[in-house]
Image (cartoon, rainbow, N blue to C red; front, side):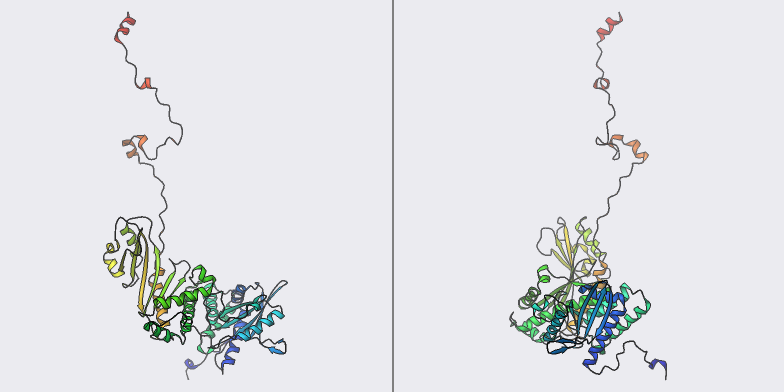
Amino acid sequence: MGEETWHAARLIPTSGISGPEEQERRATSALLAVLAAVKEFGRALTTGFGAPGGTIETFIEVPFELGDDRVYPDGLIRVRRGSRTWVCLVEVKTGSNLLDRVQLEKYLDVAREQDFNALLTISNQIAPAATTHPTAVDKRKLKRVTMHHLSWTQVLTEAVMQKVHRGVADPDQAWILGELIRYLEHPRSGALEFEDMGPSWVPVREAIAAGTLRASDKNAADVASRWDQLIRFSCLRLGRQLGIEVQPALPRKQAADPSIRAQTLVAGLVETGALAGALRIPNAIGPVMLLADLRAARLSISVDIEAPRQGRPQTRINWLLRQLKEAPDALRIDCFTAHARGASTSELLRDARADPLLLVADPRRDVRSFRLTLSGPMGSKRGQGRGSFLGSVLDLLDSFYESTVQTVKPWTAAPPKLRQDQPDSAAESVPPQLLSTSLSSQDGADPISPSPTERHPAPVQRGSEERSSR
């Protein structure tokens, strides 16, 4: 039998996982072991929760007495640096299992009694914002203990970015981290990516088509929450490919209060039948905006670009067209001019390439900005796969970023140039006082000029000359 049928030995095998409990226990042990073994990866995850940059120790299924009960958190992380010790309890869920509020509150009570610092939860649930937790608990239990959440997608993203983009100093540690990545990417590990818009997706689409959706409908709130999770998952997925941290772009009020964000999304669903979101990509030309129109079953993705501040309107348009060589012909360009409401002109890239003057509405008005928009059909299925809503969103995002966003650079003014001295031939034909590089009245004292009498001598009377000669 050939070697192609042999299975390589793995540090963290996926074989032998008999059920959800074994899956959860193995994922917890693998993650915490690598967290302590790979220094760069361990610090990247723990310092964001307030841990010092010291030696990391990890344990699993540590028992604690809580009143008459004995509880077993899935894990414990302890970081020591000098006289300071930071301790965090860990609760892990895999697959479709959800975090339990009662269980989390018990662990918060244990942490408070033991004077621990934090509780970390890990599951396939994706919080809509970095500062929020997917499971609501009694806020009084958070006065002395902080609670943090990581999705398995975030864990995998951090591992890939550390190994591929940031690097690991020790080769053996890099190999260990690679084994964790391989394990988490396997479907039997239970570390799933975002793959479902939930059971409310179809009822909400049908209600929007019938015009019966109301803000009080619980299905609308569930779809709005799933959409925010999809935006955050898109940020993690794109950031993993680019090697940078991509974040959702939210208005300040919505970022500070997730309830305002939820109300805004539900209101958009009810009034317009659309869901909106944005991604902030470091060093990109601008935030990438996503819009899912459930009534028209269309997706659109766009980015706003500031036009150059110099040149005629056609010159500014040509500046943009030169950077869109790889963009598809179906890309729409909206041109915004000064002192005008809305877009003054709108053309497909195919037509603008043939005649850039189509985007010039009035040559006397300055072009201030452009909006590039790419549209596509929206999948209807709630899950992943061909014809799914998730697949259509992610495919459109990848295509738009690769063909358009990453190719456009912001305009910068040319630096001023020094004036050059006039050549000798020019200096001979031009009076010195007219040369651009000659001294001005501000450069120093003027040379002594002849007096008026020297420039214009007084006329001599002929009679006086005769008398003097006599």
